[in-house]
Length: 107
Image (cartoon, rainbow, N blue to C red; front, side):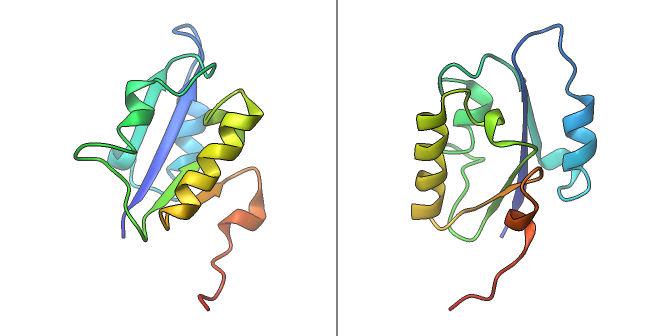
């Protein structure tokens, strides 16, 4: 199982430091993917690396994000992404939703 963090800001002027600092409490710093790209769609190279290629998350892995809007600004997209990860057996842990950080017993 690997733990990966994903941090995103929408513009080059914005700073990723706060997200990285929060994610570092749960994920090794070299396992945090960062990018400065709009959340209007999912066609972002850093984000797509979570789904394809050498960094692809697989069953049993965990993805950490600071808030749900880091996945997408579009609520429907975000909902679909959470379902995608759930269907793949990947746990998404959202730092501003503390109940997602609790490890529930596996049935």
